[in-house]
Image (tube, rainbow, N blue to C red):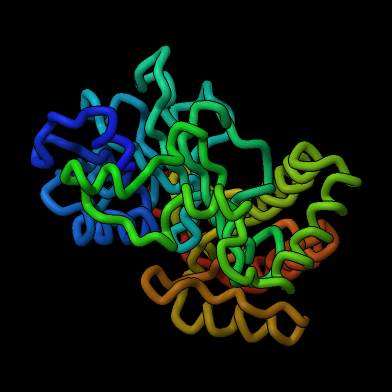
Length: 327
């Protein structure tokens, strides 16, 4: 995107080029750190830091309202991560909600330099404003197939000559990472990960037969509603506590805490005894993380919800002292 911006604005100094980043969780934080390593003299602008809108000032537990964003005038790139797996936050799918991505704040009647990381939510529901994006990328390993394959959607004007841009002073881009290289090689400039491509093809074929993203949108909506409802039930009894504010919760990763000394270990042990594994939250957040990717069936979700309800009924609970604002 810096190469594209250099070709569009050859007389602009590198110090005057800006990349806007929307910071809502661990993955967008990592993207910011990498950008600061790689963009040379260009400036990284934090258009939003969700931590500033959290209760403690340091947690990724919310998607702030549109009024909180500060975009640059003519950025080389605007980056956001659609779903944050670690903290369990995600932009709302309904554009009328304050937790949605603020597309209306972006310039009109222009080719936006909008880049989105959809690694953990690709194919789980339709992508809002798909045509407004310059680049959308996603790892296949969540909803499409085995690890080792990346899906990249690149708008035609972003397939630029990186060497021509470098000659004008842009940061050099390795040939193997140039979109032009992949476009000219029909996505196969080198030997592709054949097995991952094959399995992903099978998954896409099956997805199309089922109805595509509209089908998964409805199924995933029901799945996440069931889990959030039982977490709310656990909150009312003082057994559970959701990690994120209401309206900011992820469809793919529901994060919550089991309250009480030793209660989390007891919860995980009981889940494992019932054949449910991988529920322990990320080490940076802790607690419980329920992943609801496309491969997880409603029947499996119902089994988990039944166990959580059983656990809630058996635990004494800790009476809440303040009204809940989670989920």
